[in-house]
Image (cartoon, rainbow, N blue to C red):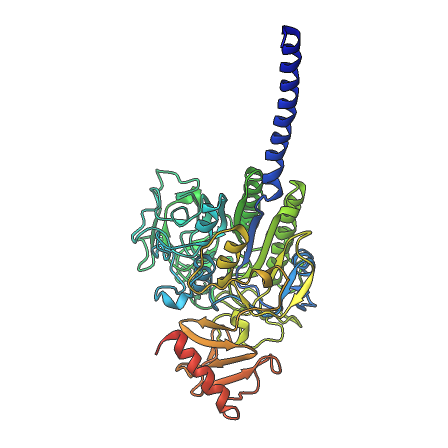
Length: 509
Ligand code: NG6
Ligand code: CA
């Protein structure tokens, strides 16, 4: 090869080489985006009932944005929280484990230690392992620290120690102290010269309370809720200091929405998981003034309209960022509805024809259906075909199902792989499900539910909800009797025995 030929040869090699490199490059750019893992968002409501969403039959209020998810995705008619109260449902959602396995999984005070062990498998940990950035914005209510939290220092362990890269939360509930936001373990806007103290045992000297200072209240308490007063609202628990850090109740929805939107914008280039846990329509119901009176149903209706608006704004952000086709969205609620949950807020008086539980019996705190059967939909633009599914699914199943989706082998202890049902490809859900309400449990199996006898009042008078207690076994066929009016325990002893045996097998003696 002479010099000239060598030059031509070198040039040819260079051109071929670089076009090959180019192909390689375009391949390496293309491939990850072809199997790019979908973003996952869980939008979780607090106390939203089966009948509170228009796509689930509500006629007295309209929830167009929730409906968009329900009517554009899989809308489950048999979708359950594990529990009829907040803490246990959230525990199950995040750990894939039945909450009754953990005796502390009950409604927690704001000072409770972290309920999830830092060594435990969690949904965000599983996703983190698969390369996801993970975040929570909103209500936590799973405890913080290891007991005796000093709110003026870094709070640990917190969501950040159980799988979340980012957290911006309220510690417990909107009606419990401390009434401050906590970001990555630090109270937001805390003035070190005005330290926060919190107690669920006794008041701090000289501090006003709902009980002793009714003249300071803008919202009256009905039962409980008569300790420290923040923004005119009497709360559960006592708090002192932290003036600059206290949240504004009417701005809470906007506050969490903005954090959720920022989170999406910041992490749009990596697969992300967001647990967006709204506070509505839990008490105290404090709609922003622009939503006041919008439902005609009083503050409970107004905050549902407000929450629906938040969902709409959040979806807009996903759309604007071009993320809709690559984001799977799960929408649900932690437990069923309650009207008067401790404040005089017109929820009962202005209810009109609205039926928060839809056709279901009971409500929050109840072993009857309305306690745990909740709005539940899965939406993924372009990937999931709209459909209504009767498959029996539970929030506890999300961990194992989403693990399958993202290529992880992890399985939650009680979490079934129902990915095909969640994607709308199959009507096969669970065979059975143990439901929990204030530490009592019942068994759903196929179309049937068996509620064992429990002591205690049939109705919690303060909230006016039938909670499922009876001296007798109760057995209902939910397909024929969704309102649980006909107890078939006496007329169908075989089914009853079969279910008692199954229940015992799962729950232990
Ligand atoms: C109850 C509260 C109720 C609500 C509930 C927790 C009283 C009398 N009632 O103890 O208002 O805060 O706890 O709700 O204090 S949950 O949705 O977070 O489980
Ligand atoms: Ca709740």
